[in-house]
Length: 254
Figure 1 (cartoon, one colour):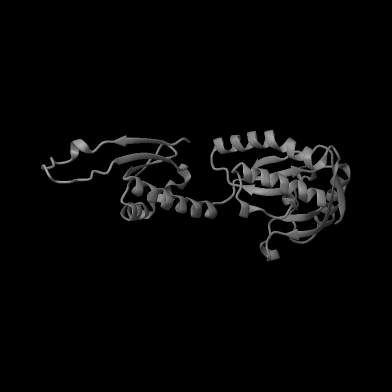
Figure 2 (cartoon, one colour):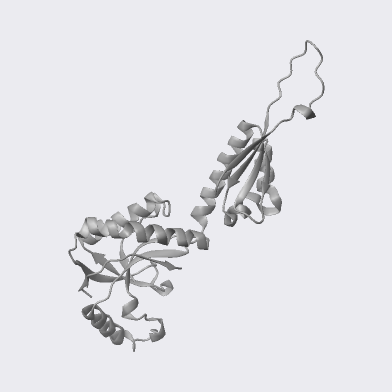
């Protein structure tokens, strides 16, 4: 299937799929008296509130608390995971807290990579020509053996997928939407300069390598301007911290 979609108004949609504080506690009153002539160094005990989303707390605690106990042993810091807030309280020397922060960051990175996407970033496409051709295609395969017509989406829901996102909390979604609404028009204007975007669609494909296991069909979207626009929007989302550099993907129409 080869067709052209003329997109006049280009927008990007996100669809559903803290602060730090540090206090110092003096340990002087807890230390034994030092005899005259003796030298004793008392290291300050610090308390540090480290922001970590609650969705990752389980990875830090580990099964039966094994992971957090190992962190305490390795770093020498006291680590308390809050059940109600996106924070972990660290207590100990400055070096112990620094080591604990590094270890926690590594655990969070691994947990993030293993987590499933929650939303996708897309450019909606719709035109009379595209709608007609998609409906004709759906009609042609609706009577094929093994095809359930109920799985075919309405052509008006077709979109170009730019990226998948991991927005775990409502505040993450609100922040990403606000950022996108503020920055996307600037990106679109800089790339298109008020010129309508034409997109060539061809080569029906499946997401999985095994056709028997496939549950998503997509069409490849090819256009140099589209690629430039898509990459510019994705780069802006990376810049805003809503997407990782290694999470970029090829543009697909679904």
